[in-house]
Length: 337
Image (cartoon, rainbow, N blue to C red; front, side):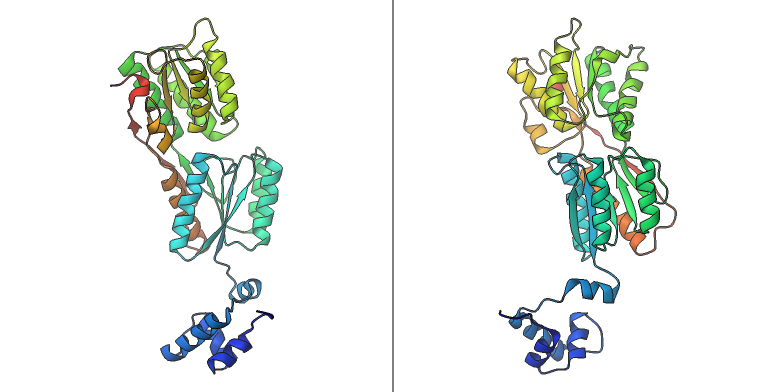
């Protein structure tokens, strides 16, 4: 087409008035089915698309949701995005995704950019350590937020979180009670994020219940990264009193851990037991398959989307904190047959 198609062009093609075309395209009442079909056929023939910004200003809604995550390459966050997207697609809304690359400055810019795009609400997986920054933006913009995975001290938001304490506790108690492991190491996320802190709490709680000393040199922070987990595993297995088992707090760090074990031909579970927090397709396809917790990421995404839509529609009520638990998935990496 050599020109921008307007409502006037569609009206001429359909043989109706411009207001009638507008009512049909905005799905308003008081238009016969015959006229509605004529207008839709004309719009399709002319390849007419309504100008988005003008339409959104007129209707005071965009049907667009913002989603901000630290890393699109992280299995956990990409699955949460899928859960959010599935829910809103069913509700006729679309998703704009922002990747912050684990950078707080980029995260702040992403929030402001999402607001400038007139999103109706935002699902945010924040890494921001400054609660005041996020809190002030939430307060000043007035856009509904739901935070996932990481809890920070802000008001007027809903939270959807994994039950990290009990998840870690279940994995470590299984190693202790079923396999008699006492020398259990932990490759951890950062402790200034609630998910890392809570998983560590669950790990320590399980040890203390059996009067097993918590060895601080058995705890290695790898910031959810494969390469850092590789180095953490090297450090752990270079120790004089090397551990009997390693708990990886997410599947991303599990990959780094297993790469080191494979490089050094250290066999699982004969030489060392391995468990992890996340269950993804590749986790069950490992040799041996890895003992873990059932997946909850899709459920977290759907629940976050549900809460956000309630806020958008003004039906949210009191702000909520929802924690989603997961059951053990027993496989061979811990020593079970």
